[in-house]
Image (cartoon, rainbow, N blue to C red; front, side):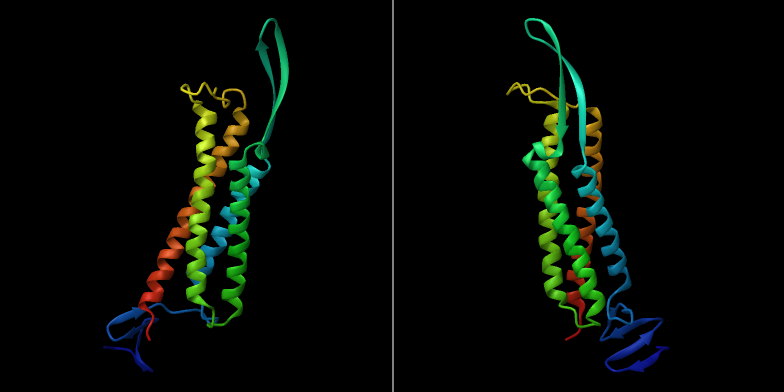
Amino acid sequence: MNGTRSSGGVEEGGVKVVAGRDYERRSSSGVRPWELALRALLFGLTLAAAIVLGTDKQTTTVLVQIPSSQTLVNTAKWHYSSAFVFFVAAHAVACGYTALSFVVLCSRRGKAPVALITIADIITVALLFSGFGAAAAVGVLGKYGNSHLRWNKICNVFDGFCDKVMAALALSLAGSLGFVLLASLSVMGIRRRPN
């Protein structure tokens, strides 16, 4: 093998080969650069999802025909649904955790509690997917209603509100899948770490 010997293995093109296994090169701070980049992206996605849904509001005029035709002014706000409140709170927590883990990984210089951060990443995956599921369920009811329970759809009236909910759900799904990738790669990194 063409490479330089180091303690515990051979360096080849930036990859350390130890007992037949390849380990990623870490930055000078001891953190994998792709992990920091992915955490920065996930911070942006979770923050954007929380902001998009947390600022969602639409006021519209509805024609109601009871005994006589009347117009009513109705407003749809994100905090009228407990599922949307949970969604915003879950994404705010995930955003805060992502920022905190980014700072911890950068400041600990290779001594970061990797196993603890990986466990917190997995918990964040569960939190984000539960928030996504709750908001998506309410979104489906808003878009299609439920004829069996005689719940009418509302997205034909509050179309702008529903469009922002869909945008927040898309951002949330991207962030949730990103956390799945991050947690999976972290678990594989712990498994491959030499003793």
